[in-house]
Amino acid sequence: MSLEIKGLYKKFDEVSLYSDFNIGFPEGTITCILGPSGCGKTTLLNIIGNIIKPDKGELLGFEGKAISYIFQDPRLLPWKTVKGNIGFVMSKDIPAAERQKKVNQFIHLVELDDFTGYYPSKLSGGMRQRVSIARAFAYPSDIILMDEPLKGLDIKLKLNLIKTFSQIWQTDKRTVIFVTHDVDEALLLGDDIIVLSQAPVKISTRKKVEVPVTDRSLDSDYLKQLKRCLLEVLGN
Amino acid sequence: MKISFTKRQYISLSSVVFMLALWKILSMHFDSDFILPTPEKTLATTLGLFGDSKFLIIVGSTVLRGLAGFILSAIMGLIIGIIAGINSSFNAFLRPILVTIRSTPIIALILLALIWLNPSLVPVFIAMLTMFPFICTNVIDGIKSIDPDLTSMAKFYKINRNKIIREVYIPAILPFIISGASSAMGIGWRAIITGEVLSQPKYGIGTVMQGAQTFLNVDAVIAWTILAVLISYGFEKAIRWSERKLIVWRF
Image 1 (cartoon, rainbow over the protein chains, first blue to last red):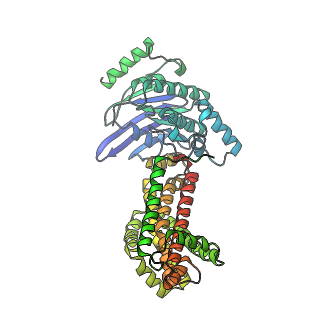
Image 2: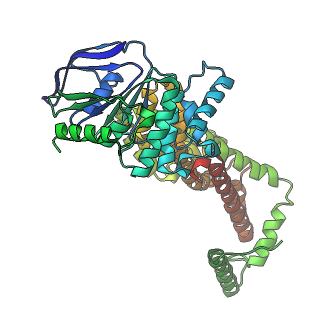
Image 3: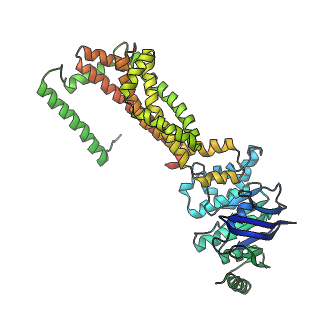
């Protein structure tokens, strides 16, 4: 099964961002979208998330699917604890005990067991983003949209979060659409890497990464070669 | 138990001592209880007030008026403030009304209220009118300060409107409500006593102050004033306490 966008048109201030654009996302995999800043990657996520409407185009396979989000800024409620922030997105239809169990399970997966009662102001930037990741997974979604969630974090923290993310992702392999401008992030997380061009957006290239997400190293020859190839397409 | 003072507390304490010393010097200079009684005599009168058989009903009446005015203005301020915070046209409509209420001299409001209302209602009405603009303006500012990223996050996760109001809007504006309540109480308290002085309800601090002034009981006027200041201070402390309890995430 695949999720698809067909014949997408979107204009902003008379500038045609998307014009007859087509893209597909295999379900149960992580698709990374790479592209220069301002090329319309976030717009694409907003269209998928039904936050903005396309001028024209079809979204196939997305109907009735629940979506969760990991934003660049963790967007945590300052007046709720780690536990409260994760529980916030969970529906009251789920019995309280079950909800609690799920919240605790994801807090454990992002290794914040000792911080459940902490307010965001007392957490580091990396810890806040972990809460945001736990929230996205605790929400019973079919698709996770990620909009540059690692931007601005130092490399050590980035690698750490990528490891945490891929470990949790392994547990139920939800469809992930991950937007970034960082080639290394895409190489470490993506099953598919799609490079977009400047507007009107076209797919410049699409690569498959044939190494399991938990076994990747940026020092491996395979990823080094893939990186060179992607950078060439990106024009660096 | 050892009580230790910080440098700032020492400075504040010296300011109180300075005021008392100035008072003592002036009272010695005038040497007349009808102009300015000594601090000791006033203290004795203040302590004597507690023995007055009507003390509780007098203080209780004023405090109840203050609370009634505060609760009414808080409810109105919250409802109208939330609507104005969300709807910019209503906000534009409301602004001149708030500015007018705020700029009208309290005494003018009292004189009009005396014509329109039962005297015992005048202080409550005045308290309400003086406090309402503070609370309302702060609620509007609170709503405007809400991080749009947080509301959009809640919408992304399909959180329903009621839950967004309860768990995003209200906690976000709570610090603004409390700071509005604090300024409102400061000014509202003075307005209530002024209202009581002029409207002369049966019981009230303002009523007894006016009575004492008529008979030139200057020590009683000052004693009741000290009591009014202490009650106001108590309310301010209660607001600060509730702030620490309600906005625990900020501390």
